Length: 330
Image 1 (cartoon, rainbow, N blue to C red):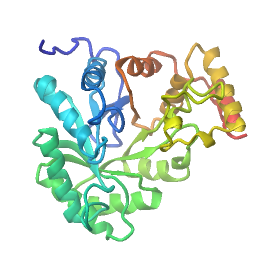
Image 2: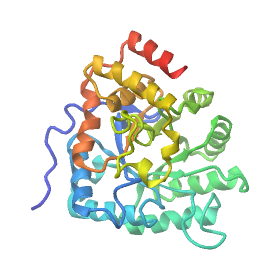
Image 3: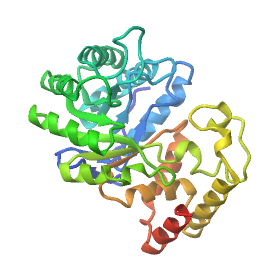
Image 4: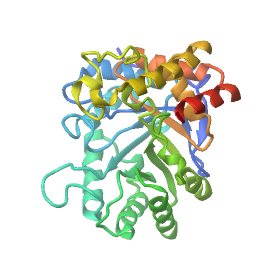
């Protein structure tokens, strides 16, 4: 059965301008870091992506190494796109990145011109696209001149392989340098993609000010702190299918009594306002207008809809924000 997008998909989603650019992104975007690899269920992934688009999520974020194995998330999305979304290409923002380890040898990671251009060419083949909307340098390279990395991004945009250039995981000083070099080459830096949550606030220490000054947007990944800012760990147990149980980025040892006390206090605020803890976490990020979009992952369309519910709720009040700040500062 052919897919027809929901005719009311733009009625409820809110969009924010990305820095001082002409591009707007949905307040919630869908990231394919997890759940879209070769070992994941294609039907579930397809339903999640199409449910997202039906809800007004127009931005889908990937990277060359997303999977597992690396590259498989782009293949999965490319198949979903080819089978369902080709008629809607002009309504969709697809992004991908290069910077982390992707293939063997000295040219398979970091920020050299050779790696970035070769990586995007391979990503476009996996995605089945002529261009991506945003192409990112996934991380700063301490050994490659910033002029080379940004020069590659600028040439990629001028060649039409990407419409916009972005950076990811760059701190304030690194961002200022990258933005300056790109501007000198006639290509603005659209956006910086960074980790940010109530439990991970490093971007508040100067980076957001730099991005605001330079007119660059900010999209925040890991807004739920790898699942900590959900109801999964509130009782102190480690569910068998949880990220903490798998020993990845989130370790079970990180879930301390002190953290649990903080999480439950935040959950109390959420419940008082008729919200879930995850909704509270998303609304907390959106309190700052400098944050263009919250980048969420979802293992199912049901989980996606639970997170989208945050946008139908009232923004956090000054009193709630003050109480949250007191909890986070203890």
